[in-house]
Length: 356
Length: 226
Image 1 (spheres, rainbow over the protein chains, first blue to last red):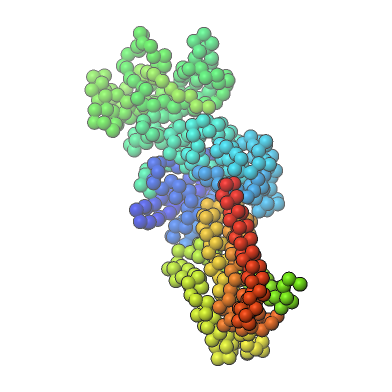
Image 2 (image 1 turned 45 degrees about the vertical axis):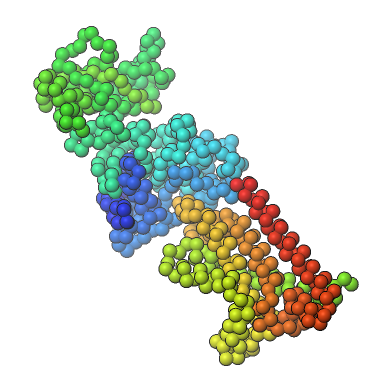
């Protein structure tokens, strides 16, 4: 009863949506897909901004939509962040924040302070939206959605309208939200890096259909339906900064199956990080390599083998402790090495991406 | 005195008429404009056309039909008689009703444009912030459409001040009751009182120019700000 059940069907000219999902009642769920894949429409259906006839939506046991029920958007306890911040131009930042706050039950009202502090907008409160930068506007938009003390936060590509610099400005705030919020967040995005950094649960959409839905790390490691965030197959690992090597400017991060070295980006010891390892950066060897430039050598067991997109390539999944890595190798190499299920194998990781 | 007391009386009557008509149209025109801006109904086209009719019809045609409708055997006339109000033609309130019809598009069209410019996004935002549709209308739509309302109000007022044909058909020419400025000027000309006609006409020209100037200056400034 702690989940969100959503079933929607839409048949519009040139667009269809057909989903039947059970989403976790906590953590960040990324709705990932290309534009036109239906992810935004799905989010709008959940918000009640779009009405799919014969749809069904229950939020932690509360029916928001079924054959006889339709809870209008303004009665759903949600917060919504639009792609463009869409602040009310006739109100100041504070006026925007208070707009929703005034309309919820007094008992549910919490002070704005937390949202203001969380998004670092204290110095902007008296300004009109037209005098804010794009990044500031979006931060206010997020704070405004949080000010109604929602039980679920829906975010529709909150970074898509921003340039790279503004994105980098906002991502840390989103990560703080991820760590601090106890409510579920549905996060629509087509940007692999955002998903890899923020999501706990991944829903991949294409052509209005759900391709896969599951925990981020497991879903990315699936080989039966290869799920790609962007161009490349790859996995995301949870890790902790365990050592910093000042001489060589490297940092060691430990994950559930071993450790990996990476460039030291100045992260504090003990800090929790996510590590993204792409299949193209992982190679395999049957013997321990002595003379190699590659620092990260791990030992594991071949867990699954599947065809990759190109007929000459294969994806090999290797279990390392409790974690798995994906390696992309040519089929010729796989045959030459005699790679088979259950085989012990050495894994060489050329490059990893650390994400705070 | 520069203007005769009859002239002043006509001016006062005209301003009163225009003020009341504008006030009524704010209340009556706004829902129509809202509906037209929001609907995707197939009735949108026909209703839009009906709203715009007074723009193209000769005022005498409009006045003629309104006279028939409000007359002793017309539906409105029978209704007002049944209510014990009597007949509306050749009364001030008959004039008000006729002017409401005559100036309808001048209120509805600018307001509708303003509503359409706002788009659906602010309404959706308000809904996600717990505002009911009515709440949204008063706290988001009206403030954002304020420039459109100002334009509409000025145009409606000025247009009502300038009407003549409908007044003649419905109101006739009764001092202090239906004799508005435009009719008074007509009377002066008929009576060959060209000097009087000149003075009153000059007032009308000055008034109309001032109103339009204010409107354009204000609109121009508004564009530069955004």
